[in-house]
Length: 107
Image 1 (tube, helix red, strand yellow):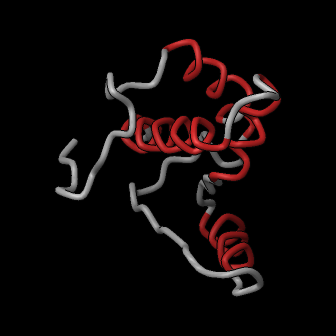
Image 2: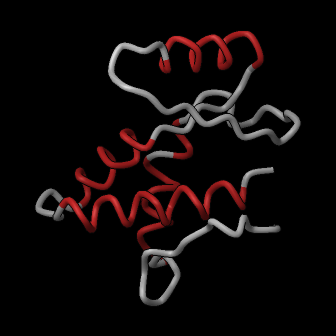
């Protein structure tokens, strides 16, 4: 996988702990609708304020194109179920690391 020059790793070791990745794969990734669909690999990123329509567009892509929708907030909720007392900075760091790893693994 070719990484963007803007790619970053927030961990001193540069990698997500295997047990954390395995937990998220089991409790987040395997629950996603359309995971078994074979689509061309295309990453669409939405960013914007509240009530701007990001979720509405993502739902349309999921329904009409059978896309896989990955949500940072859902990963954070899953991590909080595993480690309720996790700090905000670590939560954000783990979410970033997992998503970057996940993008590389999806086919």
